[in-house]
Image: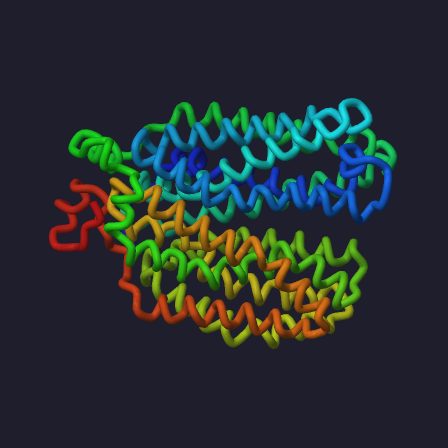
Length: 437
């Protein structure tokens, strides 16, 4: 592995926005039970939750649009500019929810404010992934990119853990009446303040050498366009295919896991929540280790290991999880699943960025990823519940395995990207190594 230093300021600035993004994403979903009644008239509680869930889903539909708009922006105006814009949208969306007026005060206008906030959040999430992945990859010397880019999932997981921790604190320090009345606004105020801090950090970042080089030599009209992306159709399709299995598995072992342990295994909600918290914390710690390993042995071995493990291991793991009776067994099995998907999560961002040249790198990562995530990641929980309601819950396990199998084929035939030169300076240093400039 190269002994080049890791640019920690760039790593922190490039990845910390994911923490705020996923914190906001988590607290909307988890606190909906408290604020649903504030935005819809008295009536059936399930109907209120369905309404807030529908507004939540709006964010997923906006992610491909955000990937296109902000990916294009990052290729035309710079990685730093895109990172600053995404965090501005984050702050605005959290602040809107925090101050949204209730149905009792202004009728359905409050629900409209929620919709606008979720639209902004969807745009932000759609652009943040690619802007962050591109910046972390370009700002880090070759030989340390896998390690540095792994902090994208470190920060994403940390955001979920912070949101979960805050939920536990508020539930134990405030009455349900207080949470229903005003306490649910607290997480969104904290989210807005956190985004403001990230904005300050990102304003002081340096632009990447690869982008500066591209800006000097290539006209902006040709950068970040769909026409330019169509010249790299194979790479774009690769991103969709290699994301397919990873995103379904990720949502299965993170977002859906707590509900599965509670509804199917019959664990108390408190136990299921604690299992998820502990498993996610350890999962977070694994990301840099796996990222550093990919810098030594390459990206494909980790992806292939994930593909085989997810394809063959999902059905027995999920079946066993459905029958656990205590914390210890659930934690070990959950960690096993998360260990398998670490082969994908720790390096998927850097792999995608290394596939494209500088002039279309951000858009090339953003749009195909957002499409795959909306189609497969965003629908994973719905598909799981559909199979459960149909009385064939195990069908979902086979669905996850099938998605992993498709991605595995891609991992087996795709080229290794670890040594790709991302700037002309790197190309000169590397001699004959493949260039993506």
